[in-house]
Image (cartoon, rainbow over all chains, first blue to last red; front, side, top):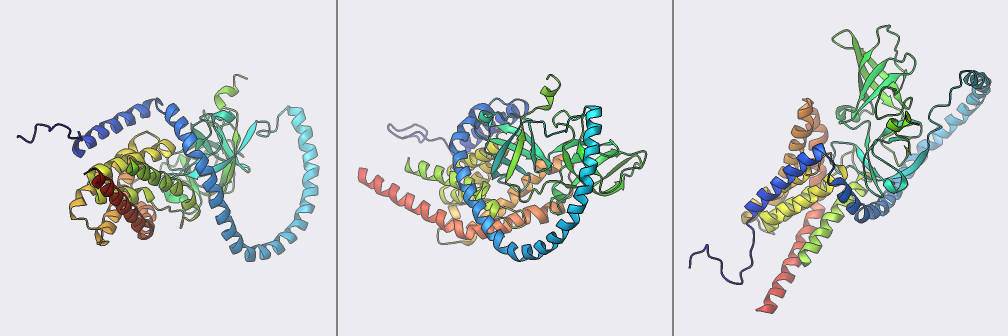
Length: 290
Length: 172
């Protein structure tokens, strides 16, 4: 009997060569499809949302507890020393505070005069906990435990404390993916608060270890920008709400073209120890319509 | 059927651990690559087909949660699993050198692919930095985890094969 003829009752199996070929085509197809559209994301995101996310929530709270305990032990000693120092600082700051309070009176009066609202206190926000981080080492995105059911949508801004963390790039019913501004594939349009000069903040994996991120294309013809200046999100960005603090300039260099400047900035958020974030439930696109 | 359930659970657990607990145990921000260990070891233990299927589903998990496009990691992991399956013929459970070497090479290959396709294509040319700060630490940490995880995977696979043989005998 020739080996090609299939015997009766023999189970049909696909040789692995062909399986590889078929799956390669499926993968290539879905890469092309998802690059241009988000056809599958709805179904798949919902499915994994109900299977994986509950586990991630549980495990990461245990993991977080463990790492917190170990960190506590390490830190007790340094905290004692720091406590002394901070107590001295409190006295200093109380004096400063009284002076500032006087200034604030003046400020509120002036604000009323100009009818300006305090900037991002007015936005509606929702707190979320980080439940998983990127499984690889190349990018810095993470998953939070709030999703479409809580009103979170793609492109919403995410902040922590006082600074910008990133924006939502993918959502499921009970989870959302946040791409942070320090990720290598992220760009944010920003401006220097003092001089309103525009610049581009670019995440960079090479600088990640030193805790800074890169900025470039700063046009500063008046030469007024100095190290330590505040950088906030600009109003020309189409994804980010204006005037959210990004960080402070730490180094500043003139580019080879002698027109623009570039350098590094220290982010306002401590990305190493991020556990909870706030999602601003207001999209930049819908802001004008209001 | 039993095999599919067990292996599915393994992929699931490894993905969960990698995205949650291991971030708390990371050294210098580097997380070990459990999915590579799983894909590669099932590749050389069971052959090409197991390797490529497990690689495909491991990659798919990563794609759904952390990928920009669907299918990229699935493709990379699938080829790693398939290539490891080619070494099935010279694999013996007693020998630990070949599995270690294969997992190291797989992780190196994974790192280089990621660099070339995700970074070099965006004009990030400093391969020396990426190699010493991302790829190499990941390999070292992954190898370290392999020492613990690989015997466990080997044991699970042996148990599965035993039970499969037993149920096959029943029908004869």
